[in-house]
Structures are given as structure tokens and as C-alpha cells.
Length: 250
Image (cartoon, rainbow, N blue to C red; front, side, top):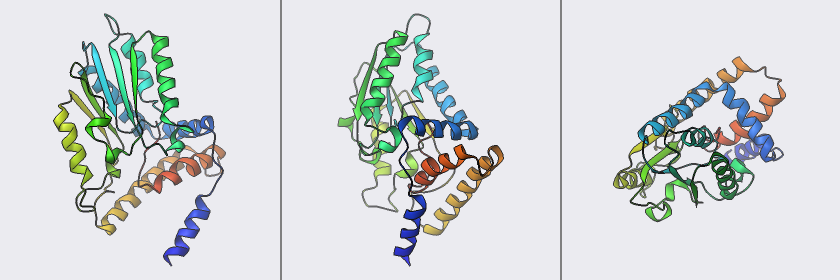
């Protein structure tokens, strides 16, 4: 029974890989529908920018860089800061196998953000941390003592299991690591569902409620035979549901 279910799931989710531009367009479709995600990212940026007011050197540790699009409006805004832009460093964390998020390695994100910062006249540096977020340690973060540190958790902590799931308990380890760094601000974006603790039935019911709300939003915004909607569901929502939650609409 378990093997047959796995086979059916694989057949249902099998589809041609989209190009990077196609994937980005699909994510923009969902981003336009899920206004709560747009509000969350914009709120995180506003809080971060306010906390870093007048700081000459800013370092953002992003625990899931994906395509890095969250930082485009922030770079543009910081570049217009009275008195000149700060020196901005971003450490982008994401496992090296997540080509789904970029169609390439994290290097392509670094290139895009570096080009944007240069066009805005902002001194900028990008650190590539191609590692699973649950495996991050101090050595991956390139922290400097003269920087104002910000940590961004964008829909990622629900993928980190706690002590009820594994004896490694990376949940407590990651949070303890961040606390030891004494960041000036921590921004946390998360879905309202529990996906990283052990009991299966409560976890399943919460995820069911979560995806029912998600598809209710999609139904209200797009007809079911809409080609862009179908592609977005195939390439974004279906794949992400395999990992337990909304992760990459940014």
C-alpha cells in the first residue's frame, strides 16, 4: 500500500522542468494571489530597515535565499538613505541541490544582487552558504564584529525538526546559535501549521487546514482551467507540499 501510494504521487507530480524565467512567472502568479505572503515579506523588510537606521555596516543572514527577490526592494530603499547607503553584506543560505528555486546555484543569486547594488551605488558583498538550514553553524556565517547583524527566517523553521523528532534537535541548536550572535533584529515569517513535531495526526490535520486555505485563495482569484494557475500549482505548490509548506514564493 505504501509503495503504491508513493508511485501514484510520483506520477501525479511528474512534469517538465520549467526554465528559470517560467518558474519566476509562476511564483509571481501565486505572489499576487497570496497577499499574506506579500505582506509578510514587506513587513520583514520594513522592520529590518527601521532597526538598521544609521548603521554604517549591515549584515543580513538569510536562512533561505531562494531567488533573493526579497532583498531587491530593500537594496533599492537603503540606496536612497539620507547620508548615503550603508555597506551591505548578505549571507545567503540554501542547499546546493535547490536548483528548483533558481535553475542554477546560489552564485546566480549573488550575481543578480551584486549587479543591482552596483547600479544603485551601494557597497555590497554576498556570502554563499550552500548548506541545509538545519546544518548551519557559526563557520558558515562570516560574521564580523563591526557589523549590525540581522537574521531572517523566511518560512524555514517549520522544516527544522525539534527534539520530538530527532535526537540531534537542530531546532534548539539553530535558535541557540542565533541567540549567541546577539543580532540587532530577527525577522520570522511562518505559516500557521505545525510540521516539525512528532505526532502525525495533529500535524496532518494542520497541514490539511493550511492547504485548504491556500487553495481557497487560488480558487477565488483564478478559474480552475486557467493555464497559469495550473502551471503554478504543478511547479510550485505541488512540489512544495512534498516538503511540508509554502517556501519559495519570493
